[in-house]
Length: 532
Image (cartoon, rainbow, N blue to C red):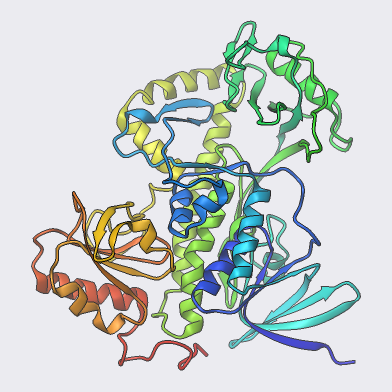
């Protein structure tokens, strides 16, 4: 019996936040993705509880910030954060990169699935990838749905299917790194007795340790890490980290008594814990061991990786979805350009170059943070020294940029300080009225922003108008005379105020060709000249 064969532009394997965002980015660009998700419904398991840093600003550019948070407004910076359970005073910074968005992973998946369906994305639940093979022209996915199976042929396939990625294994991409077994993480929802909490503030007053904030601040003792947070429903979220083997064993189901025993070991007190109230879902989880791994390559032929399929690391600081969603933002427009036929040489390969470097930075700082939280007098001494270093504004800025993802500068041909960095959200006055730069990025297209009223930007970019939006605007303190911004929010080129127009025009045309392909007329854009 012949196996049925279907076609798509891109197969996205994995219907979590990363896969769904990638599908949205592709659909916005006019590409036809199919999302395969083996689970019948979104997982009720409590995972991520928020986003921080650069990814929040990107979501604002797509109009998703308000949809995720449910409130209107502009992303706001937080005045403090943690690095390895050490406080960062971000309020002293003139350029604070740490914006946050409290949102559960379930809510992220719900909003992104709604947006994907609005864009016409084909999301197939209960469809599991069982095999793949590729040629120079296409990749074929073998898919099982219940008792049926079929083949799905596409130009490219992207694995967004988590740390145990089937795509990565089938593509033969190595996943080097390290796995340790000495760290035990426990997390649970519980009800704390009112007698254990400070009235009005909700703090936990722990003898020998002082008052602990209910805003999920990591507290280190010589026996581990403790954190808790007050939840809107009256319950509390608790977390402990301990080094060594779990005394209750690895294979037994986690219980609330296990959580209570762990809190007792870490804090040296007996903290009564009652089951959480309400229908749930409620977190009760033990993770033994730690794995820090980074895919050797993010692309193998027509198969690519994004999110946890490409990198796994400690959850300290919450970098996982921040990193993975930015993978999707980086890959989406480049993959679309390749399929639509206007990608310049090497554009798709730049996905690995740029995002692998970002993965290495997270690989490094999550390991460093875990090391700073470990018990022992040597670590205590290291923390004392590190804490002194964090009194310096320059060091605070450097660590904040690292956590936000702002420390990495992509390679460009432009020497302007903004080039290669994420674009600032400028407040503009345009021909259509006031607007933020983030609002000009809603369509997911490149934007050429003329801030000086010079004729050369529009003249130089005229032959790219099919791919690039040209906007003339004013702002109070323009950081450049003109900015060329990629669909993922990064500055591809910028001109300094007063830069000679002939030199600026030449640099702009080089950047347009280097990132967005040949000028219209030199090489047709769109599906009239497909990649193959």
